[in-house]
Amino acid sequence: MRLPRFARNDKRRLLNNLNGDPQHVMTNARSKEKQAIRNEVWEKLAKEGISPRAHGIPPFQGQVEAAQLLRLLDIYQKSQRIFAPPDSAQCPVRVNLLQDEKTLVMATPGLKDGFYEVSKAYVSENLWKAVKSSEVIKYGRKLRTSYDEIGNIDLLVTGAVAVSRKGERIGKGTGYFDQEYAILRQIGSINEITPVVAIVHETQVYDELPYQDRDVSVNYIVTPKKILEIKNPRLRPEGIDWSHVDKGMIRRMRPLRELWLERG
Image (tube, rainbow, N blue to C red; front, side, top):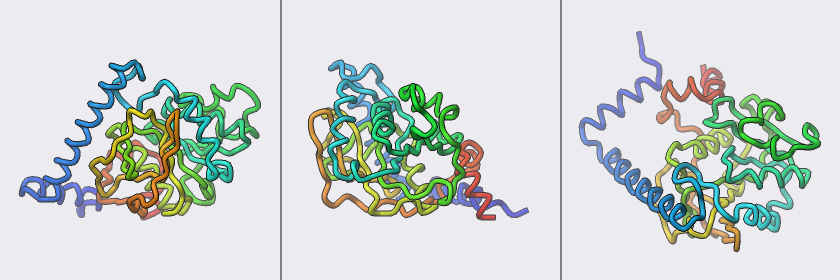
């Protein structure tokens, strides 16, 4: 029996790793660099009392102020349909979206159940509860992974562990936001010029960071005190790189499962 493509890719990557593939060695080195930066940021945020969490996408003191500053951006004011991840650090942003009569497209944790749409058409009160990752399934509308369902997204807002003044972004190491971006790009809901905004604390901003091909760069960094615009961020992935999608990811993530089945 012929192996499915993702299994053949897994086998090919394994053989390359065993043979000392230079690309794999470089990827490993970059991954280690990134993890060292994550550990540095988490330790500093905890030590300075900025965040109670020394892992993941950290919530931080001033995230409400950063969410308010985002409202001043022209691209935010003009956007009607905005994507945001389920991290707790972005909760003030998600609430503001609804208060500002915008439509929120929100990923579920780990993309397990894909994307949901939340708007004041569905929620008239308890906005904070409606945008929690544990409640979005109850208050939102489940979206199939297609352009017809998700539509055009005007702006993406994300958290980060670290970002740079050149637009590089380091997440918590799971690759969820990069995968969310790739899926939305794959179905045509976003394109290269769709702006990406990172909401972080000043402590999380670096001059430059290690970068890999599948990483999603940002156009703006919003902190509690200022807005930074990145003039020429790196080009972002054009869609899903199926060679880096294994069958475990397809089982766990509804959007990948739906798109894989469409591929036939």
